[in-house]
Length: 446
Image 1 (cartoon, rainbow, N blue to C red):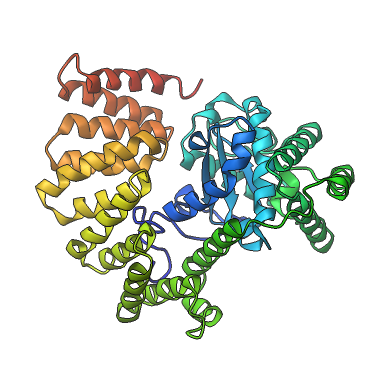
Image 2: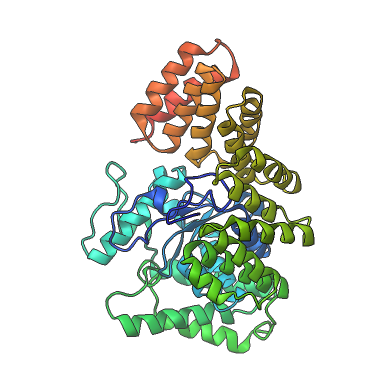
């Protein structure tokens, strides 16, 4: 992440697409969606007990980050929770963030998102983020405009829940926190932050307060529960708190100016988190002469951590040392074989070497990743490149059809699906999939 925007979609926080906050700017989904294997895994670890008591399978729930410093979170596209970086960075402890996740889980378990347009249920992540970007601009501009051409999803229909649904989600969240014996003070404190912001900023309160109508009755209900609940004084989990501090440090290190990070984490601080933050800051400067030794020391001290190896691979790859980046990325994947994002990063390094043998490995890694990340069109873009370089034109077209379908582009999906059918052997699984994509594309506008 040297300079300003970091490398476009692949490597760890390099799978991050950084740009400006939503605000009223004309930012696209690519510039708002942040993908990072370590942060997403950490958030899922913190949320897993909540999801289990809510009757959700943790492996089926996704968490995505949006690069926006305002306080906001929402659910969309099935079992997916979206969190603004501002909400994560503003959280004073892990319980505040877990409380918000519990509330959003209440919306999922309550089936509230099923009341939105069905097209959004299976929308690509990019389309959902683009919708929210439009919603934020509409809300701040008070114009109530439609969010995306052809989608027919208005700000109120897509984002805003009713007071009754909010109360139901609050009740569910408190139930989940009780059953896992985690204090609800964090969620109450978050409500108080929103109340304070609303008083200070008047009409320009944080989006969370607009899309999740905050009422005195809700705050009082939360306060009464905290006063009588047996788990209200339960301490914050040290493991969750450590995860929270690491996530916040990594976000700050990648999103803030490196000088701010180096000032906040001085050389005198030899904690693991501070060393990690400094390694990222020096890499962004870029000062590989300082960042590589720092990350090498972290790898030596914490050999089972895949993300330090991932960071080293990212440093090397983005500085023109692709061959050297292969080993740390392969080691990261071996340490975290279930991480689709790490496999995508490794695959991109393989592709960029120009080595036909490594390109074939990239295809294998990406097909594995697509089983998990099929809604993120990036995996299909990489697959199209890899298949094209392998002269598998039918599979390249099929991948482009999948990408277009994930992006909600009906015409492109139809054209590429037909092209795939022309180039693929008949009566094979890929050929049947091309036919399916053509049919699914026809349903995009319905």
